[in-house]
Amino acid sequence: MSKKRKVIEEVKIPWYRKVKKSTWIMTAIIVAMVFAAAGIIIYSHVDTYSKLNYDKIVDLGKYEGLKGTLSIEKVTDEDVKAEIDQRVKDAAYTKTVKKGKVKKGDTIVIDYVGKVDGKKFDGGSAEKQKLKIGSGKFIPGFEDALIGKKIGEDCTINVTFPKDYQAEDLAGKDAEFDVTIRSKKEKVTYEYNGKFIRDTSKYFKKSSYEKAVKKDLQKQARETAESTLEEELWTKVQDKTKIKKYPKGLVKEEIPLVQAQYAQMAEQYGTSPEQMGITEDQYKEFAKQSLKEKLTLHAIAEKAGIKITRKDKKDFYNEILENSKMTEEEFEEAAGMTVKEWVKTNGYDIQILRDKVLDYIREHGKITEKKVDAVDEATEAPAEGSGQ
Image (tube, rainbow, N blue to C red; front, side, top):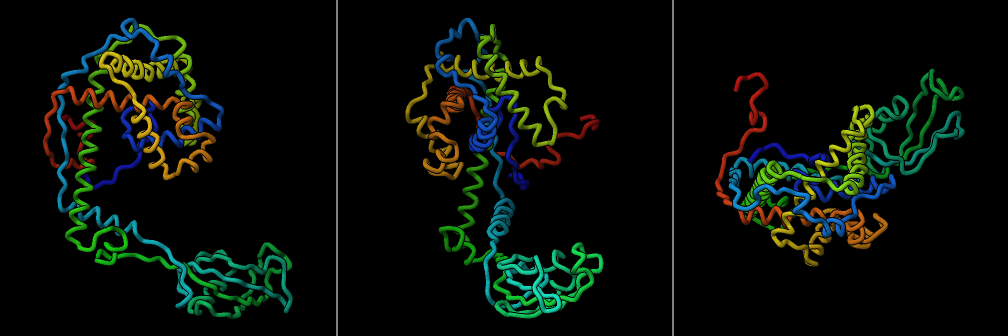
């Protein structure tokens, strides 16, 4: 098991390829909101696909009896320790305290009233102001004067405005601030002990907790291996599949999706598709690549008798809600439509079909399973020019 934590994959073209299911769902939600804001209607032709004559369109490669290896990384004691260390670190939280003294680096909440020559001045007073001691946001001397003061204490601080202070009527003048220190934010960190286990899990003993962590890692390792295997098998199918003829209408409607995806990716890197030099002809080719996968999925489903059931759809809707951490009502408020309508409008039924087709390919393949040692990501591929 690699000790490096995986990052969420970026949106790629085609939009659903080589992305783990849970990652795809979250990516889809984010991207779809962007598309909706741009007024782009994404693929909505499930009915059109069901009416195509695939014998005339797709020359399918072999999709049954494919050989593959399910290589599951072993989970070691070091992996379990690294995971627990990360969980302990992630469990740290901030709480508000009203006792103790102010220290450098603390974030405190204060009320203050400033006066010059005994009179209040504009901008010199505030309530419930958050201030990190040492940030340098206040005039010199103000933050340092609070160090050592008690939380809940009223105090008076005397400072002098800098001579080059932006407000000329205050520049170089002595000021007095009456300050009330309401509270401070304190970071609470855990040690790996019984309290951490009780506070963050349903377990009470280290032995039970560590066994559960190992089980979680083993599950993740299997899911990663299954995802990798499915993509390898799918690549084999795609490599041997030829599209005899692309339906012009579907190509035309795939292009805006591809354009929107590239616009989204370009924005993340502070550029634009135009600056990247992407041409209309390239968009058309990218659309065909994406469309090839969709046509292949539908062609296999038709020949293998794979159908999307109501239960499949319901499970998919529930998974979207679970991964978005929203209730049905919250999702509808955020998206402006129900999760069912959202999936249909954006054509994400294709992901349900893809999952079922990949399951079929794997179930009808010749798969061997083995445990493997983790490969260090830094040495997984030979360096360029190494001669290997």
